[in-house]
Image (cartoon, rainbow, N blue to C red; front, top):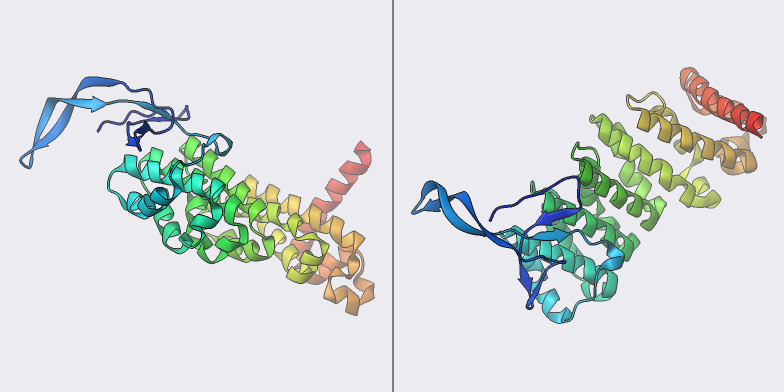
Length: 313
């Protein structure tokens, strides 16, 4: 089967039927083309073979339709994801998406077997499979929230990798999936999963993890920040201020400003301040928790931002 793909669009090319229907808005086109084929173990170059060349859209979650036969779909789901036929894999991934959206409970017990197969598709070098698996991950996050925590690690590392690569349409899809992750999984569970990637050797992975971390912290709320430890959070943010990539540094600045705002409203969040009231100011708090150089960098960022807000008001 020949594949023709265009990264600037949201379409891939293949043909497949499921229960008598073609997958995802297929325009059925068949044409003759020159291709290499194997005959008795030998390759015959430029042999005329008939190839189905059809165009398929990546369907957004809100536009997916429900399944007609849920029981049959569930029965065929895992074999479909394990298939060597990439078209069958894409079809099965889209059915995972439909089940997540329309029949969440019916697929819940399968998550332990299903997630490794989605991860396998995330690693697939074929863009159609990889991007569909990314979209599938986002729908799973939305459907199962904290029920996914025990299965999250392999999904997370693949999405961080995909969001860090140069292929734009895959990268953008992975970034959207990570955004969905940070709004779906409770940060008290997610932040410890993200934290190791803040020290990853790959600067792009660090940057994506920093962005996710910064986006998740505000969802903790005041009590959550207290329970997680504002002392720990400021140390994490300070460590990212000197990172190689601007994206990491910007995520750190955003997080520090959030922490400063919360701290100044609720100085008792830090156990140190409750024991030593003289460390109640933001400046003293930073100096008590960070090395002199880190404290200086943090205070420079938060002071400049605060002065900019005052001047702009």
